[in-house]
Each structure stands twice: as C-alpha cells, then as structure tokens.
Length: 231
Length: 277
Image (cartoon, rainbow over all chains, first blue to last red; front, side, top):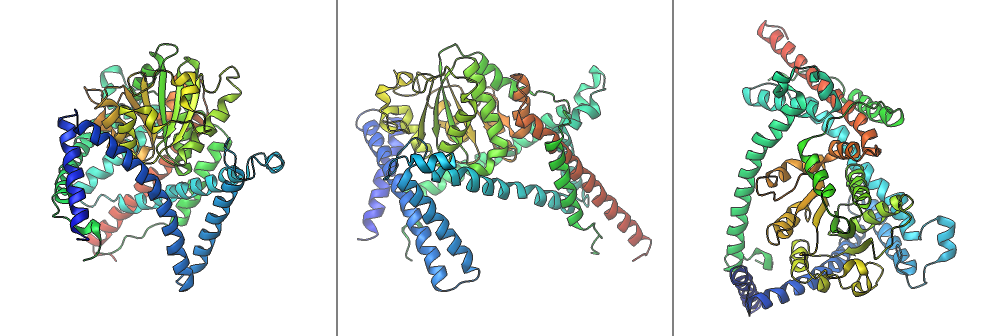
C-alpha cells in the first residue's frame, strides 16, 4: 500500500498533465491548472525542507566529528545568523519582527541582513566563481596539447573562439580587405559558435529530450521507482 | 608516454592575476565590435513602443554577478530610456536582491520614475518552469502581491496583466536553470511572446540553438563581451567595457600559455624521436 498509493498518484497526475497538453479544455485544463498551483505550494515547502535537511546533515557531521567538521560549524553559524537577522529586521523594504531597525540601519547603511548579503555573501560568491579563471587557465594550458587530429581541431577552434571573443581578435584581422572578411577573427568565432557548436548542441538537446520523455514515461508507468526510496 | 615538462602553474596564476587586475585599474579601452545577436536584443528593445511593459527575470545569484550584472544594468537602462515599464521578477531566490541592486544603482539617473507605475519588483517565486507556465495562465494567482506586500491590483503597472498577452517582451538574465530555456519554452513557444536573454559566456552554446528562424530567442547577450557591446550600443560604457580589457588580456595570456605548452610538447617529441631523454 505504501508504494501503490504514490504510484497511483504519479500515474494519475502524469496522465492528466499529458492529456491537458493536447486537450486544454474542461476538465483537463482546469485540473492541470490546479495541479500547477499545488506544485508551487509544494515547491515553497521544499525550500523549507532543504533548510531543515541542511541543518540535520551539518549537525550530524559535527556530532560525529567528521573530517573538517569545523567548516560545518561555520556553515551553521552563518545560516543561523542570516535567518535570525532576516527574521528580526527583515530585508529590503519588508519589515521583520522588530520592525525596520532604523537605528541599526542608519549605522550600517543597510538592514543587517542586506549588509551581510552585500558585503560578505556577494563577494564570497563572486570570489569563488572568479577562482575558476585560474583553474581554467591552468587546465587549458595542460589540456590543449595537439597530440592527435581531434585534439588539434579542438585546440584550433578553442584558440579561434577565444581570440574572436577578445578585443584583440578585431585588432589582429581588422586590416583584412572586404573580400577576405570571412577570415576576420570575430566572424570566424561567430561561425564556429553558430554552425558546428550549435549543430552539436542541437544533437545533445534532441538526445536529452528523448531521454526525458523516456524516463518520464518510466516514472508515470511505475517502471522507474527509485524516487520512492527504499529498495 | 613521457610526461612533457611544463612551466610551474603558479607563474600562470600570477600572470592571470596581474592580467586581470591591472586593466581593471588602468583602463586601456580596446576597440570593440558589435555582433549580430547583441544587435537583435538592442533592436527588440529599441523597437518597443513607449509605455509597453517588459518582464525582466533575474535568474542568477551573486556568483554570476561580474558577468550578468553589467548587462542587466545596460538592458534596464535601455528600457528606462525608451520609457518601457519593467516588471522585475526572479526565478532564483537571490535574483530579487540582484534586481533591487540594479534599481538602486539606476535610481539617481531616473529620479522621475515611480515604483508601481514605471517599474515593480514582484520578487521570487519557487517552482521554475511550472511557475512560468502558471504565470501564462493566471499571472495574478502566481504573484498576487509584489515583494513589499502590496497587492498587484493596486499597482498601475500591473493593470490588465492577467497572463503574458499584455507583456511586450520577456528578458531573462540567466545563470542556469530555471532561466532562458524555460522562458523560451513557455513564454515564447506556448504563448508567443518575444523572448530574449543574457547568460554567462560558458552557458551560451546551450542557448544558441534557440536563435533560429522561428525566433524562439530574439538575440542573446552572452557573457561580458556581449554586455560590453550592449554598453557600446546604448552609448554608456560601464563596468563591462572596463572588464573586457581584463578578459581580453586574460584570454591572450591563456593562448600564449597554450602555445608554450604545445611548443614544449613538440620539442620533447622531437627529442624523443632523436633518441634523447
């Protein structure tokens, strides 16, 4: 019973939504509209569930003193501080439990939550993302070696696209006459991105689309049950 | 296979650091050419009649700010210049703050703009693609209030907005999913609204198939370069134009190091063929 009911719900909802795409009239159109609203409500609760899960996972890691457990303590402290500040004084124009906190806001220039968001969180995230530049540079230096025909092709197109996407691309080939405009680096880069890359992407997208249809049907028909957990 | 001797990668890190930092401090102002996809976005916004309403979705977080924030600012500025009313929304939780930050940055340039009349921030709504789908069916059910808690019935900008039909165009600033793809699939494919967007350079190849004859996507701002091009088109050079110098030099350093790597490899191979170590 524990498994049959969820399977039945999945099947019914899945079939209703598929039919509503082809017959968007009563009752299917209405039903799918209702189900979408349910989905939005569940999504809201999923965020709450995610936060509780974050709490639980981190507490367990600290409790069992797992490797680098100190970082999990920092995660939890950061989480609690942000949530508490948000609850107490709100964010943006929304008031918190203690109102807008005029005194603290005038001192910091922002509400406490917004202050930490703009001055800590925002910069930490941007830093993490910016570190990619160093790793990409290092990876490109080591990986783009023309060992085979294929790697040479990859290397050449990567260099052309990179050059085309820089201001140097325009400078290097800007002197070419109109008749040789197709050799202008930004044009070459655009060509590579528009044709070979897009063709490859389309193939990937079609493959992924078919895969999604296949796995969705497997879930709706109850063949794929791993989402139910257990076994 | 014998491993090719390579330069210590810390040298590369050091060069990249200076290559990025110095042009940000001392602007070079390298020339920039505008591309077709950026022109398409510009033409779409430029061709919108005065008073039309645009839906701008901020689907990114601070991690993608360096790339997406400059283009967001340029697009919003262009809309305000053209007197297009903007409905801000976010499919990513932190997109709300991103939109707020852009409004804050432009507030002084447009002191006459009124919240609720010329622009509104509806905030974040969870649910991704389903949320967009529901907006197309009943906008007011998904966003009954703006992010300040005011009922959207009280906001003049939202008058007559019950679905996507009164929206001039949709623009998503996207760093992943939900983002441009979801907006294209619903706002354009299901409801026929012109849809455009801006994304990080790395995710651009996945968006390019949507720029086709059906105009699923009307142009695309891909990465910092496109943002800089857009700034050029609206004649307001900003942080993207400045950042392009840094990006160009960083790319050049990478290309030089790729060349060095290959020269080392070929030299070693030659030495190996001759019977060297």
